Image (cartoon, helix red, strand yellow):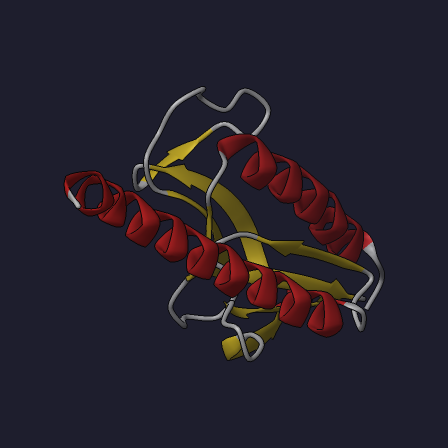
Length: 143
């Protein structure tokens, strides 16, 4: 009886871990279906991001699919910054460590900036470099 009571918390922990794994699997599958309509997409626990032409769509991943989706065009963006711990850093030489990581899109009009969270600094830096290159190409095109 005592041994059974000792194993009961461990069984509960395994059930909880299995449930968390199933929830994350469902989020990834919902993301996979959503991302099929984009040329380039990323998933992490904080946000999903998809790019199609010059439009970027982002939102929060859930088991039913991304929610709180917002779309904006790179044509409306003046510059892109990589933020680590709410401070802008160089995308070409990002720091190794930091807590809060985001790409910040500064619009050319006076509206508020858009911050898309990332879990990893290298992933955010790669997306930032790619999107900056796309932005420079759009800005150099004749109107």
